[in-house]
Length: 332
Ligand SMILES: NC(=O)C1=CN([C@@H]2O[C@H](COP(=O)(O)OP(=O)(O)OC[C@H]3O[C@@H](n4cnc5c(N)ncnc54)[C@H](O)[C@@H]3O)[C@@H](O)[C@H]2O)C=CC1
Ligand SMILES: CC(=O)[C@](C)(O)C(=O)O
Ligand SMILES: [Mg+2]
Ligand SMILES: [Mg+2]
Image (cartoon, rainbow, N blue to C red):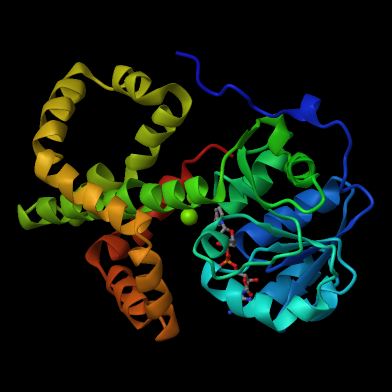
C-alpha cells in the first residue's frame, strides 16, 4: 500500500508568498524562538510580540530582536503567528484582534483553539503549520541544514492562497527540506492530543516511573533502577526514530526481543487498550478540552501539584546526579 500520496517539498513552492511580508511572532518560548530565528535567517521580516518584559523578552533581545508589545507587533503585520501557550491564545487574541489588519493571516502551530471554537477569526486566512517536534529541534535541525517535517492545514481561506502561504512559512522554517503533509485542524488537534496523552507524554512517563519504582521497592539501588528504567529510553527511542520498531527490535539482543515482546503483550492487554481507547474518545468528544480549560481557568492548581510531585520524586533526585555522568560522556 502506498501512503503519503502527497508530500510537499521545496519543489512545490512556486512563489515565496511571505518573502516581503511582515510577520509577527507572538511568544518567544519553545516554538516562538525557533520560528522567529529560522524565519529571520530565511530572510523574512520578523517582529517578536510579547505581553510584557521578562525572560522571553530578554531572550529575544539577546537573539537580536527588538520585541514589541503584542498589540504593537501585530499592527502592521501581514501574518500573525500564535506561539504562546494554547490556553493563553484566546485571551491574547481577544486583546489584540482590533489591532490586527483586516487582511492579515492568523497562523497556528497547533489546532486546539480553532478546532474547539475558542478562536474563530471570520474574515482572515487561518491556517496551521505544525512542526512535529519540540521547539529546540525545530531550530537545531534548521541550523544544521535540515528541517523537521510539518503538518499544514487550512481552516479559513479568504484569499484562496492560504495553503501556498502555509507552505511558504513551512519553507522558511526549513520544514520543506523534510516535507509537509496536509491535514485538517480536527485531525491534527485530535491526533496530537491522543498521541501525547496515550504514549508520548502520558503513557511513557508512567511506564518509566512505574518500572523505576518497582525496582526500588524490590530493593535495587535507585541509581541502577534509574539507568535501566529511565535513562536508556532515549537510546531505544533513537533506534525507533532511525529504523522503526522492527529495526529497534533487531538492534537489541534476542533475549530482550523475546522477553520484551512477551511481557509487553502481558502488560498492555485488552483491558489497558480499552482504557486507552476511552481516553482517546474523551479527547474526540471535546470533554478533555473542557476539562483543561476549566483547570486553566482555576489557576492550573492540579497541574502544578502534579508537577511538584514529580519534581520531588526519588527518580528526579537520582536522575539529576546520574545525568551529570551520562551527559559528560556524550559525544560533542
Ligand atoms: N512545545 C512544543 O514543542 C510544541 C508546541 N506546539 C504549539 O506551539 C504553540 C506554542 O507552544 P510552546 O512553544 O510550547 O509555548 P511556550 O509555553 O514555550 O511559550 C511561552 C511563550 O508565551 C508567553 N506566554 C506565556 N503565558 C502567556 C500568556 N498568558 N499570555 C501571553 N503570552 C504568554 C511566554 O512569555 C513565552 O514567550 C502552542 O500552540 C503549542 O501547542 C506545537 C508543536 C510542538
Ligand atoms: C512537542 C509536541 O508536539 C507536543 C508533545 O504535542 C506538545 O508539546 O504539545
Ligand atoms: Mg505534537
Ligand atoms: Mg501537543
